[in-house]
Image (cartoon, rainbow, N blue to C red):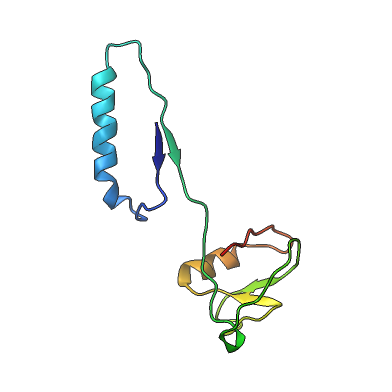
Length: 106
């Protein structure tokens, strides 16, 4: 079984139905030779970029280097620097180091 935790709240408070289903699975397979494997698929860090200069999109080329900074460092992004759009994103950027690989997609 694969459990998708992509939309789980940080405290997992909305996951009660999943916990109930796992408990039911455990009860129903108890005393049988079946031991179902369970994979918890956790979402990696994601963030949204902030405002772009003149509200115009930019095109990034594969392998291009770009700076990622918090919105406190630079309010508006451009073709050489993307800013973060949320507090969670600011935390992600602060944990990056020069040379880390970041996948960017629309």
